Amino acid sequence: MRRFILLSMVMVLLGMGTNCWASFPIINRKIRIGYLEAGPYWIYEGTFKAFKDSLIKKGWGDKVVFVKNAHFSPGWGPEHKAEYVERAKELMTRKDIDFVIAMGTAATAALLKVNNGSKPILAMAVADPVASGFVKSIHDSGIDNFTVRIVPNRWKIMFEVFYDVVQFKRLGIIYPDTAAGRVYSNVEDAHEVAKEKHFKVLEYKISSAEGFCECERGIKDLIKRGMDAFFIPPLNCFDWTKSNVEKLLNLLNDHKIPTFARDGSLYVRAGALMGFSTMDFGPVGDFLANMAIQIFKGVPPRKVNMIDKASPKIAVNLETALKIGFDFPVSILIASDEIYEKTQLPKNRKFK
Image (cartoon, rainbow, N blue to C red):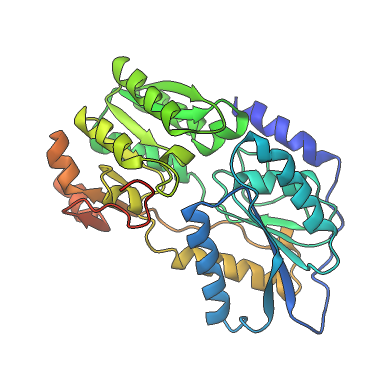
């Protein structure tokens, strides 16, 4: 399946070649930056803010401008997919934009689909650039005007850590029934680790709308099928500003299901058992700012180092552990970067 995803997505890119990108054009004014995301998401917001803050810290705050009428966020759902491509095409053809940020997997796919090589594209918050077929390898984007931050084996390590701590036998995963959905829910990584660790992956497929009711039905179905651990993916039904995430977490915790939140701290503090620590976007912002600055100075995007060797950090929730009857190994508590003794729900959640 991974090979299929790679081939299907790369097919779109093969026709445009490497675009013969030389270097960022020398201009005697502020660099004008356009932005595309599929829709609002808290990871995107945190990443973008950290990126902008880092540019300011590094002395580039007065050398760039984020063009307001070139900041696009069409919305989530299949009805908006055509607009992703339309907005991407607009950004790549507009004469008043010098540099484009692709935020997330869907936005990156849209921009690469219409890429004409006219300006640099820096992708951020992409679930798996390699599995998505966006890059040739972790060392080479394969496209002269494109680059993206890559953390090698990040998601495989995630499942390995979760298994080593919990020792589950049946891991439940919910994902949209699309090639992209399998990528950003890390389905192939789960299966790869399952073969190594000898556990089963129980799948439940939903539509690309990723609605609350679908996810609730999926969790109930997985519980009936005997799952003893659940991976919390980056779906809209787990977005606190759109969905009743508390109800989904309560459903899992009431059935004593250990959970691992891919997007980390916010979910662990709110009731997930454990996850990656993602509260501090600063290091990610610094890495992305360094990538952009190199391009501003004339380094072709394809020549910019994409590999971020940052080590994953772990967050755990002790109240949830007590609620589901799970005892964390002392070694994990010592190694954890964030330990929440009490559950605290996000203030900006939709349902209160």
